[in-house]
Image 1 (tube, rainbow, N blue to C red):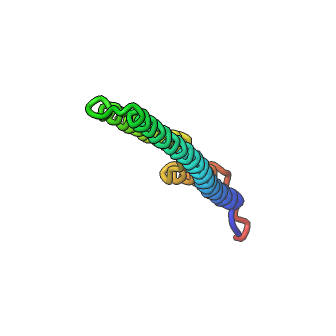
Image 2 (cartoon, rainbow, N blue to C red):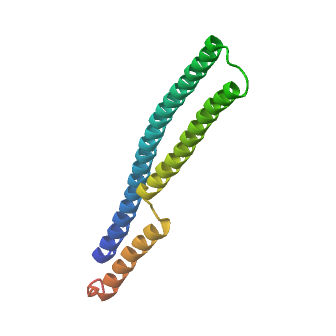
Image 3 (tube, helix red, strand yellow):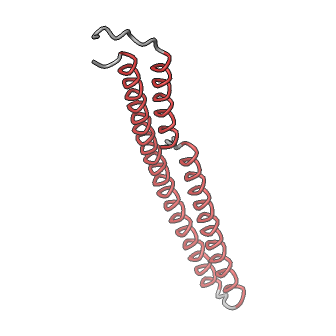
Length: 152
């Protein structure tokens, strides 16, 4: 028969191992949920940004069309007309560049947020927990009074 202290020690080690496995599974599930939420936020932001960029391009085209119509109605052509068109294109490109930079910064921020919220699981920590439980069981078995051998 097994010594009760040894059985309790084995159960303690097994319980600690099961707890470590459970922590690992919970950390993975939490990390997946965090990543999915961040991806959904990134997709939503990208859709919004694309819509804003499209609207800015349409506004720039309307502005250039007004410039052309005004120039055509008044019979103006030349450097001032070309300068207004270049200015309109430049403003559009600046707005697009700013939007892309903001998008890049937002993406970095979301990535940093995901990394900060990620639950970490350390196999070393789990191993130390299991080893600690094993040592406690061993220590208890050494200190436990030995039952007198009655089978003599």
